[in-house]
Length: 320
Image 1 (cartoon, one colour):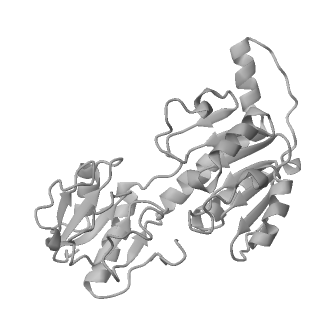
Image 2: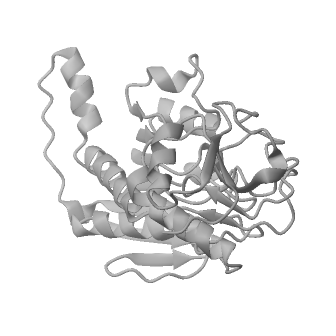
Image 3: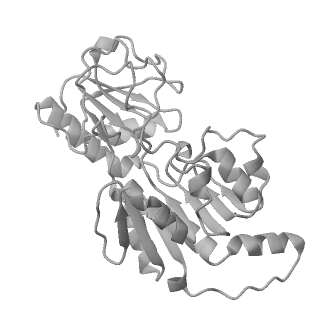
């Protein structure tokens, strides 16, 4: 594959530059790839005007300043909320997101694991084990457990399908109408309360936008049936974290699996750490895999170098 001219800059505090560089060089052998450093500051950038492509995850404010010849920004993941609406973005530069099938499968696997964990009441048995107590509970039939998936994009739709294949009664909710085999789909804000009121297990997979920020406030979380489980693999800012903590404490929300938080890393003193009915993971439900994502990134760079529109382009006005 012929490499286009120009330089690509990599910026992520959570991903290994050398691994991504080598994966990209397999498809773009002649491209110059430089590391902005763990803090996304300057690193190996000697001339910002020479940067034509950026592969970044949550770069700091001002990162794109002086990149006057930038042609494409590739978000190192599915959620693009950290890129949309920034003040330092050059006008007219397209933003794309990675849609690697491996990411969708990884996310679906995490959601399925968390759903089964709550459906089989594993948190109850974990707590009983710590007490040295043989605390039998008879398993429930899957079809009697109602799982609601909020957000039916590429990741959410696959997760909903995988959960449905296990025999659960699955509902899906999204901004615009969707159709998924075996899933009862709802659309529009006017139907959200109806979905929440039926959810024994709520799975949050929405993008973070101006419309969805704080969507699950105290009033909406209180509409969940008493003892319902909550799984959040999207963004912490979608949920009122203080209200969620209170509802977990008083048992209205019976248990939770949380991969994302309002502040990350979750502060050491946060009460969620000590809750026996909460499982915390460090934002790893789905991550981009260099070996399977590099070709998609390279293809988009080649498209842009030929003055073609890139695939998987983000609509900044919608936030996804």
